[in-house]
Image (tube, rainbow, N blue to C red):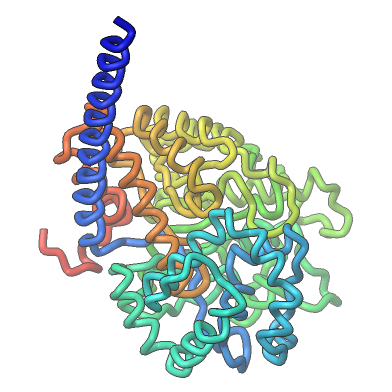
Length: 460
């Protein structure tokens, strides 16, 4: 009897293993089918900060320069490493760099910042190793150096190999520049200076900086709020003439994303006061008024408004600034505006999803979320698909150089496909709907919401 029970138990275990293997194979096949489809899409990348190398000076670019400008650098610093200025970086040997940061780099091997960054090199450089090591560092760095001799040629090749068709370029470091290199980029109107500097009007004897220096160059005055708004209106017109696709607010790095509805009369009186005499609350009221004014202008111009929510890049800041729910009053007040929330609102991914579900005018961009935490991106996206119609999602890279943007896309595809494959296996989706979701997230939603048909040569 005991022998028969052992046989029955063994047979049951074998049957379970066979069924598990069949389910795993089915899931693997679904994943691969969806991934093959995703890799065939020409991606509309809705957020980047791409730099041309010369913008950082006359440097000889090596692997350490790319690490220095990547998100991975924040994890290296967090692990006890050191971020170096460009001057030192250009003179230090690779061995010296490894002695300073090699250990911290190794401690970062488990993070998504590390994993997505190395994915770019595995895609573009045929780099097969799972990690950066002292033994492979020199060879990979020499390949980077060779490619960056003619970066524009390298960028074009990498751009196409990665699968991009268009990148939205947010030039936060030179926000008044309206020139971008086509056909790679579409212009984003970065509006932080318009808001943040509105409460810092210089006195006659002070040196002009930022928006005030630019206004003087363009022949505008700014003594009153009306004059300041006239110049802001000029900047809107200039960006629209250069085919800007949206405006961008990343003010969570400097202040709360809650913007009170301040009357014009209040803001005008406060603007007229010497800026040095303003309290923090008074300065904030001027800024709040300006962002409401910008939303109204964006509605008139039919420009979507991208807004940073959640986690802040770098090492150290006020995390609470970017809590998604702080924006709730804007969504209620401006139903005709198109708000695009960034980064999954991490760590407030539930708030982020709820806002996308509640408001027809709130869209969700998955930009950067997989790099912050791949596993949280998988969990959060599965929840978001339960809550939010899939015509409301976009994807962006949010990186400075093509290698990291490529790794970001590899990571983004993997997260979306993994979530959809699991949902197909669970019977929540058909393959056909999963294909449509991939097409929309990485391309079609952006074309529709940002009105890219003419730019991409579509004839409707």
